[in-house]
Amino acid sequence: MSVRRIGIIGTENSHVDQFVRFLNIEERHPGNRAVALVGGRTERNEALCRTGNIGLVVENPADLIGHVDAVIVSSRDGRTHREQAEPLLAAGLPVFVDKPFAGSVADAQALIAAAERSGATLGSGSALRFVSGISYLTDHAGQCGALRQVAMTGPADPDSEYAGLFFYGIHQVEAALQLLGDPVVEPGSLTTTASRHGDTVVALTRIGDVSLTFTFVTPSDGEQTSFHATLTGTSGVCAAALTLPADYTAPPLARFIDACDRNEPQKDRSAVLAPIAVLESVTDALASGAPYGKD
Image (tube, rainbow, N blue to C red; front, side, top):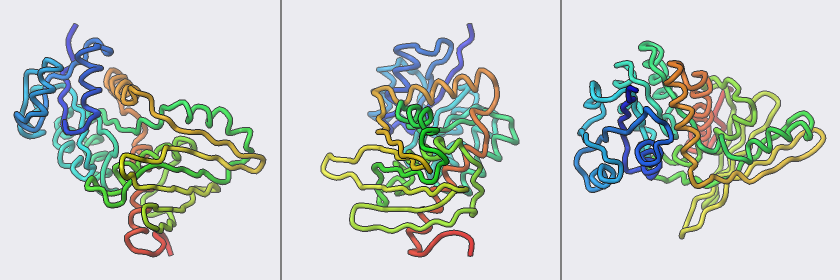
């Protein structure tokens, strides 16, 4: 059986420990193996090589071309993802971009366009989409009647060095869109307000008939608020904690490998772009101090 050789970019991310364990140690996906790391012979990469019996370490993402059959981009800062993934997509390599997909709408659109030109499989997605709380809310949403509001709460730091709210805030946004059935969100189509008081940012926007409220609380001193979602409808309220299991990166990885096997996109391109469009509207509204959106 031929092996799909997978390269990994962004090894500073703890997600990579799970990816290497799933692929090389536990062999959860026979025929798929992490064989190369990017970033040079750092102490971190040397440790990963020993743990996963990985033989190749290169300096730059483009150096993977010719040595791997697919790539995982796991760098913490979404603003680096376009530069890292675009040449690989252009070369036709399947790429999974760990959360957040990008740090701006422009970067997200460029990555989607690169994948469409080459026909490469492109995947992304928050692990929060797969937690049991999302399944519970989806199954019980009908009890709330016609949906009027989705309220999300979770940790995120607007001052994070990893592109501010994009680093952790993307989880809230992707979960909310999952609960709405992943609607198409055209960039610039939302009217969004956002305000900050101390360690908390509250953002309000609307998609169709549903108001969305995001509450981002900055973690501090080893404490952080949990992810939580509340659905309010015309006949009731349904709420659930959104708790990540220990192996929370396993479902996104499995979905990407399945998409590679089928040689098709992991999901519709609009579903990849929508979370970035929503979060960019939040960060722009917060930065400007005025509503973001159409006049």
